Image (cartoon, rainbow, N blue to C red):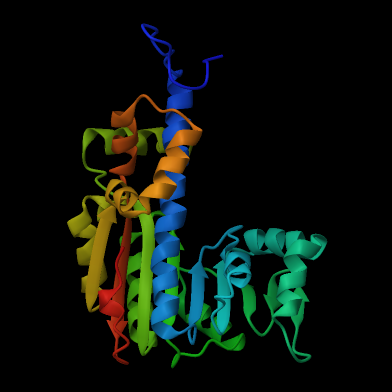
Length: 294
């Protein structure tokens, strides 16, 4: 095993095997993703003084609701949407683990609590099953669980749009831009996929029977911004994850980097230059959403 800490004088540090180097870079990328999305989200909450709603599209097993509750930053309502199988798995996990179910009950008041195999609805938190490719169905189900189109709304999609065809993702983006008085959309996914590194990523995924139906919009940061602007958003920004990583609190970055040595900085840069965070705003209420950045 490689020895931890700096090498002795004249000693060459053992190089990590390629897979470990890739995983080390991936962990830093995941750190940048979580904290980058979280930073934009918390700035939105401050701009709206938490008088807003959040809709997490394709939420999976995300734990943001619990983190926000711990920090006393809950919006008026937090929605999660995913396919029925994912929703059923998450609801089962919540029901079977008191540390997850208790915070939901603590934030609930009244008797209108609903939970079954494919939906959960409380005052502050809802999970529902819907197909994001069908915006009419999506809107109908969200309104059933008291989505308010007059409230400032933050929509989050992490590695979601890239699995939809361009017309399908355009329809979702257009629906979000046209439905709410004031809104922000955060999208995390691949970028710069037209170069050789991007092509290798696509080929590797195809070998695993995983097709990126929406990769056309992931050619560049410009194509990511253009998609948002063409579908009704007033402002659009896009940073690759290397840029996001450089904008995060440097004390935290140094702490993370100190936990695991990585001697292939070029690999980290390549990975991070092929993922991005994009965000767009539409602000009919003049809340200053267009000024949100890292």
